View (cartoon, rainbow, N blue to C red):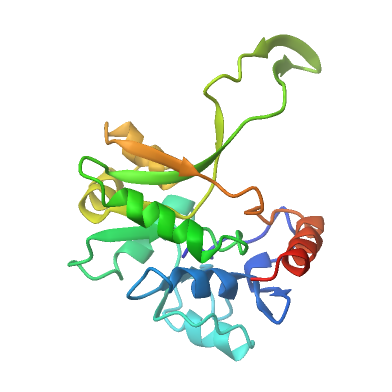
Length: 222
């Protein structure tokens, strides 16, 4: 569970703010437990205690934001670095590893189950949930429209993402960076498949997204 973001765009580490009766990230930990034998949560390197503080998890819990993880580790300067820190805490005998962004608290147990089931299909290295692009897309430069982009085959990508553990570890050994782990697998020629995503599975990026998540949660309780 990647909860290592600093929340610069939000204005605060949103993964530790309250959504309903618990921290944002705690909802994802609960959903992950429906498919996982253990949950590793990666917290920010600048958590109370300072960068590199191996007791960061204790400081986070002291603030009343115990997320219920089995293991808590400190992340790195990039998303990929944070995932690699989490991978180091995952037992070597794990067959499938699920990576999820803590800023997506509405991902339900059914979506976790779908990516894990698809990851067990022979020949699959990774599985990502996707939604078709419905808006018209245009390429612009300096406020001028250059062209309309054909949206056929284009999708938006969500987490949780499930991976064959060996394929995920091999992709991360390259030391590369990407906006999601599937991008690292794509770079090394691995096979990444898709399952339908969930329109409610929004990513909390701005303060108003937290309000929207509250409204969605009230409309369809978890």
